[in-house]
Image (cartoon, rainbow, N blue to C red):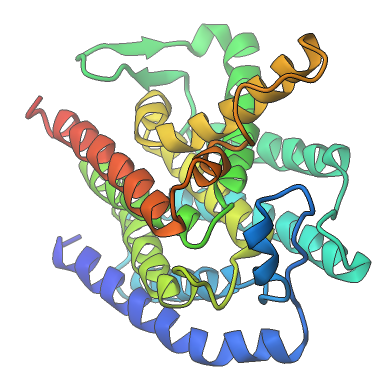
Length: 331
């Protein structure tokens, strides 16, 4: 598939998201699908009370439509791979949608229980890995970053599958934790999606590359409404969809280890929460960070939401660029 197709997919998805937002944001506001802000969060976040959620529908619809049209007009051999990725993204998006609906109905920032979400996410993750195996896309071969080595773990399936499943579910929730200030999850995921557009093209999975490019474009369009001060939040509908999308692409292009570097911001956010909880329990009430996830700690240190957006997105862009150089054999 010609390289211009990726640029066209990105531009078309950007335009689609920008236009969809004109209609969806007022509609969500009309339905009074507003966000309820946690009392324990930074006190200035209370001004965001009532901002519409489920805005993730904007980039989900835009990316899906552009990908579908491109695949139908310019079919490639990686249709199975892109369908697996979209399955993981969409099913996690549905879990997020249920969570958002529960929060709205309860009129508080508590939706599905952690157990309910994890059960659903593990079930979806198992189906995803089985689909990959059935299509021959998960055979235990994993590229080792910045080397020419490939790990052959096919015979260690009893270890490979559990670790892969934990990584799938953990990543989905790490992306969800990153969605804590205006535009942050969107801004961080744009360079991740661009990296996967390049990685998928290099791996000969053009349709996955089109989806990645379309996702990047749709998120840039969504930022028109989600950048600080946000007029709409993506909600768990959007953040869980993004988590499924990025980890799904990592596995189909056989780059889950590389993704740990590209998606370092996601994992740092998740690790800050785990570290905070662990330290709080063992010290009976002491904290390492002023607040977790990490972006809230920096907020309480005086960083603005725009600064967080620029720094976290910039770090991800740098990491994605370095890893892309390795994939293309430049490093």
